[in-house]
Image 1: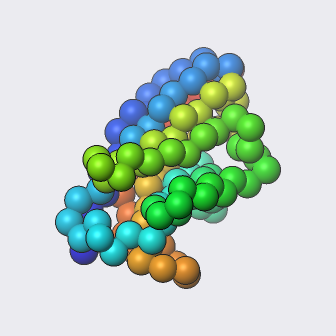
Image 2: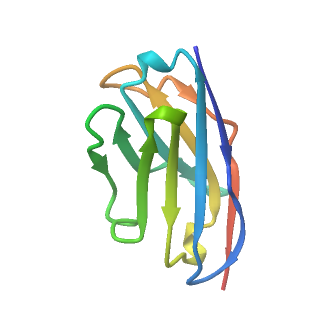
Length: 118
């Protein structure tokens, strides 16, 4: 089992920045990659970013590429999501997730609200 706890959400004006953190505990030795997802009211969950735990390769959808940066601190078992140039359409609950290999994400955090005002 891996436990994930997100932090860093809040209210920010359009054009502003926020940094989310996700601390992992438990069986962190099984982590293959960690990712961020978001879900806005009435919408499906959307992939935001991912990073391989070994090697650090990153992945982004076009909607956030160039604005969001995912990074990790293996010593602290923590992954970060730096979000710049935020837009109102970035408003959502952001979830951290991890997986043991290629395939579905196995473990999820409780989510943190990000609200971007126009």
